[in-house]
Amino acid sequence: MSMYDNIRNNYDIGPGFNNRILQTKNICTTPMMRNFWIDPAGQLWEINCDGTHDFCEGANNTFGFGWIRNGNHGRCSPVYLSSSITVYPEKWDCKYAPFPECKLLFRDGILEVITNIVKS
Picture 1 (cartoon, rainbow, N blue to C red):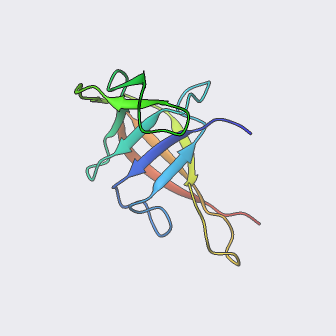
Picture 2: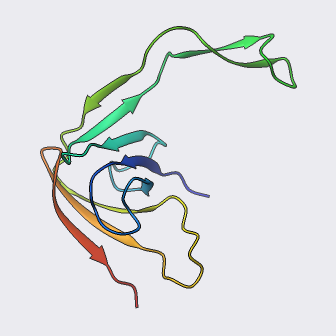
Picture 3: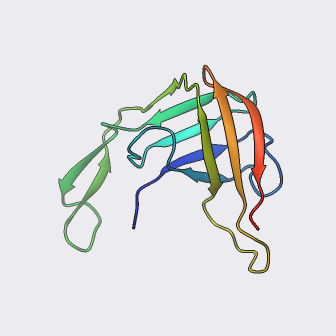
């Protein structure tokens, strides 16, 4: 099992990719299970929720421990990526169609070129 980064997509990339959660392993050299967002204008953002929950005893959980909101808010900051990444949908339920992949080229964090990868 390998790690990947999630990208919530709101940009019109094409069929099978619109308004979905996408996965990639190319944003940085080591995927760290981070969350990103592509807004409707094509800007790439990183969603950071560090420090928004506390791990406490007495939470509603089977084991008596769990995560509780602490009132802090997360951050959404722009990512100035200037390279290409390969993305694919998180879930693909179409059993008879090939699993789609797409190559996205970013320049200074703005999506500029979309290339569909055709598998043979």
